Amino acid sequence: VVNPDAQGRVLGAAHAGWRRLSGGVLEHTPAAMRAKAPRAAGWRAWVGPGIGPQAFQVGQDVVDAFEADDPATRRYFTPRPEHPGKWLADLAGLADSRLRRAGVQDVSLSGMCTVTQADRYFSYRRDGETGRMALLAWLAPV
Image (cartoon, rainbow, N blue to C red):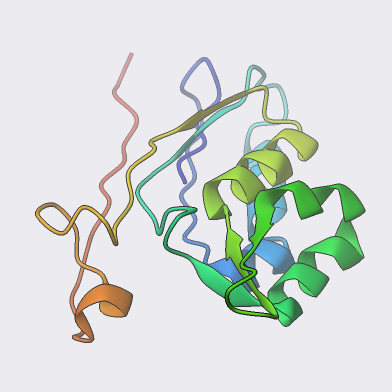
């Protein structure tokens, strides 16, 4: 996730799976950025590629971790009747919800799934092999 303010004075990047997301990494990132640029406004974020909502199966523990913080997050989980106790989780939707709650006004979701788009992305869940991905982000001089 990349969070520049509208005037391009500060930029942050965070990587979050479900544990870090439920632990508040996306709330801490804008808070740290606001501390560096207290007058910045018009916060925006981009949620990049990640496991998509049709591929990310989780257990009740994940649902519970999010609901403990905000019961409204249940809408980002779809039960799997054929697999009792399992859910499909919309990680990007959860990120969007948390970023907006943290005061980010403009959130864009890439909609790219690292599991289903094998021709573009590495996925340990899909391939069972370790790989690497990188994100480059910078502020252009004005």
